Length: 222
Image 1 (cartoon, rainbow, N blue to C red):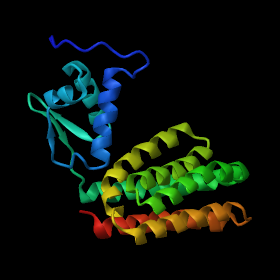
Image 2 (image 1 turned 60 degrees about the horizontal axis):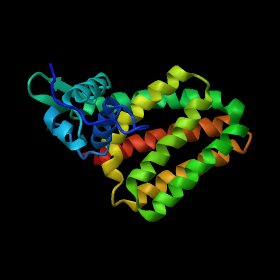
Image 3 (image 1 turned 180 degrees about the horizontal axis):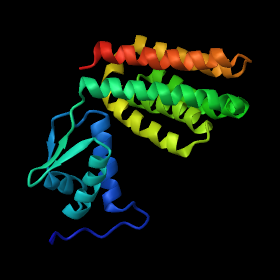
Image 4 (image 1 turned 120 degrees about the vertical axis):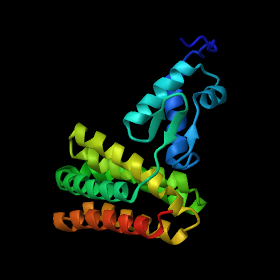
């Protein structure tokens, strides 16, 4: 039984297990914790000032998402990205996004307005050179398209896929203004297509963007 005394919870703060989950997940996705790193419960508990019980709960959630693997009496191993995982994620992402794009065409007038703030955020991040902010805004842009398809299960699948891809690819954007500029231009073109009347052009742009992102990931993946 865990007898470590937990500090009093600050009113309004998220539960300790949620804080552990969010903290470790962020570190895995932005590669602060690289694949193959062994994380101990005590390390996380000390860093966040919580007991080991919520640490275990948070790590169990991350294991269910395939981001870590729990090793009895040792801790949690950050699961390395394999070439097979890269291909599986890219294939699944194309299937989800192209299908969602076709469904979203029916509500394109509303979708254009919902995409605008994310596009503006991408422009700001590109100008500032803040890679993580750019990747986050990029993800939000695509998530809006998937949600516009009106299928919550599909939206959940997409979120899981982007979690996996963000940890594969966010490092590849760092220091590369050219790759950021290409990605931004792709999103500008997609939004512009929604203002037109050519559904096929819109879905082709979505497909080409996903494939181009995949090609960049394969070319420079560490």
